[in-house]
Image (tube, rainbow, N blue to C red):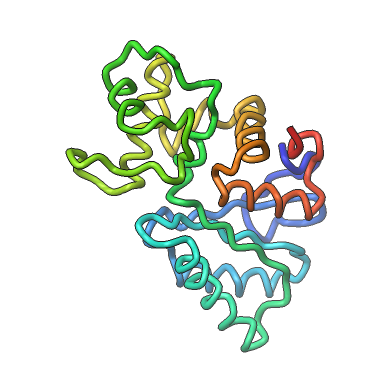
Length: 210
């Protein structure tokens, strides 16, 4: 949606003009070895013009996680094994944090106890989802609680969210609400950074400007 005209490839060897590939390291901790392997594959392929490395901050500071990934990449740059532009995108705290930025889908008068409790603890309607704290009585980290919150939001509409089956968040209308949130508030700074990078790379203006 952000880059219309690009077609998805299944393998790095299949990449050619106007195509892209998504590879997963299967969550935290981010796979340093996988990043190193991908960098080597990118260099060997020879025709890739931009690489996105996207990771969760989880319990770490965004700047610290960014530097950690950048150090891995620069090791390859130093040895001459990478000649490609790259962007590091750190999700603070996780991608579910970003998905909480869609105000339109969040019920103002929830019927379910789960969402009522979440909104009473911290309203992502009014405040920045990236600052969403973990309640004292929740047994889990920020990423777990943010996913719990998102599931409570979806349950109000009799929908489910899973990483393996994101459903509603894949729709263009959902993305437009996230763009609107980032561009009209100071919220979701790391998502706004991602949109800004996409814009500088020629992303669809109709999607990136609310």
